[in-house]
Image (cartoon, rainbow, N blue to C red; front, side, top):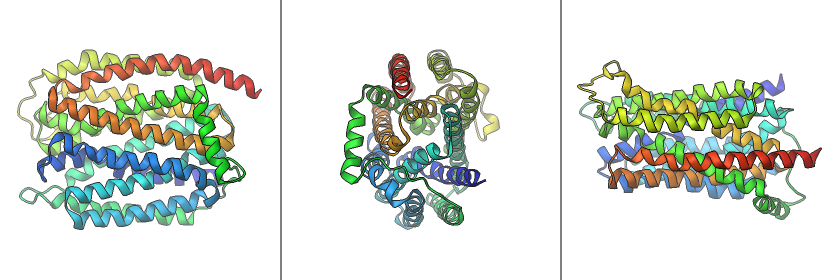
Length: 409
């Protein structure tokens, strides 16, 4: 019963941060349409979100087990509550930068906590992989909700009406804070080392492991793909498919929903099949969508669109790439965490988040540059390069995790 309460708490926290963190693509579109910011400048919001995640993850991964995961998450929720209110009153590109920096700092604390606690409440690698996939799936459904929340607050004739959504987000954050405060949260006593200096040493030692090097490269490549597509999909829908802004934003929810469904399904597949075959099929499927489906969407004659019902089926096709890329991230994370001792989960979670954040920043920046230089119709084609590299990296990771498991027997 205690474990179920903790798991529910993790789901709620992740859901709230999913809405906040991944609204960056929507705010990038708003920055262009409301504040007159160009594509490359607007893409810097991804860096304001991801770089604080990387920096804080490196620092907090050592301290967090001693501070306490519950205290850390409560602090993160409190910071975001005030940041949402500040965004409403700030109403500027600088206010957006501050918001995403705060959300990034807070999410680093949340994610290290969640990834570490998963190791405490699961007993086997398959159980670990299943819970990891389910939590990441809930995260995607939170993202999907964001694509409907923001358009719901748009008002014709009032370009600032959308900012009212931040009152709702502040309220959701407060609810999450109160739920976590009341949760029966009994934490484990696993800490990386004997003191803080040793904690940092453990993280640095992890970086030297070949297994970890291959993993962080894989995580970097995946997040480059996912965030590059997710951040710029609303802009793609508006520029290439020529959809109205509200419909363009809501259509981006198809990607998030497909990612959520894919990760929930991955939680079930992980119990039955080897992760390497699941991920191989997924990457090949994703490459197929980019090669065969994307060009048809780009060249389609969409026609006049006023609501989601007016969008032809081809408009929904490319975002379904999410079904294929969805299982990659949670299963990769689970594979490497399950291969390590539980006392190394917190520093390893820090490394996961650092390189994921760097991958997200670089991916969004590259796609932003491609949007500007080559056009929105060509930019997503270049995701084939990191997909191919990731496919190669998987087989190296399989060999290395098998060796690591043999050492621990």
